[in-house]
Image 1 (cartoon, rainbow, N blue to C red):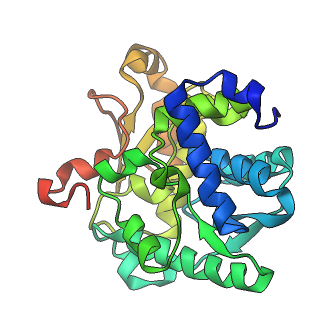
Image 2 (tube, rainbow, N blue to C red):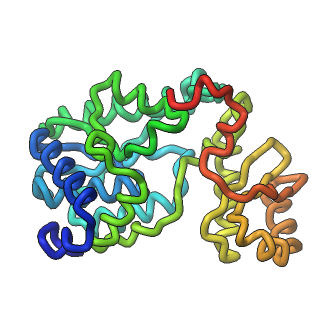
Length: 286
């Protein structure tokens, strides 16, 4: 992996360079951090940048482990932490035991992130690290993100957001750094596949994970299986709608074996945050 320096910065425009340096100044002021790590684009970049800025001895990656995190992401997280050279701690979370989370209200993410960040603050205290940081970026202020509120209430810092780095800029910076996640498809926890108001259970999350794994094994990299109880609503990029129809028989057979009675294809195609489309406009951006 490339080291942060002139060769790395040479590949970025001046605006992004200044934002990266701003992020480094924030990290330097914090001195030592626990990174809330999901193996996604943003948290991986933050982890790598923190390690290069502070040194790996002052950085700890912490991944929340629960049924809402796919096994493939757990494995990817360990591989990435090893590549970056930072210790990874897997932290068992308990959001499913919280009725306020399991009922799946529109602020579900608040309860999930609160559970995680409380545990990460405790971990930081135990390890003698100064702060917990998350990979939230500047684009996250434009969507419904109740998890950000939980972070603010618990003192979690978001250096990428504070420096104004957007998702596309983080991808560019990740590529310049040599991170394999620079072009990784957008990810979200498995609970985001469950419509608001439909109870979240370990069984339902497992069903979604098996369905998405089956589709990925068929070659669909960016895919969501939205779980409407007995109905699977599949989202893939619009460019792959024809491709998925060609695999229709295999997909129907696989998903029926997993437990879905009806298998549907969303003709609008994949889009992040599709479940938020039913929310009133007044909630977006909170």
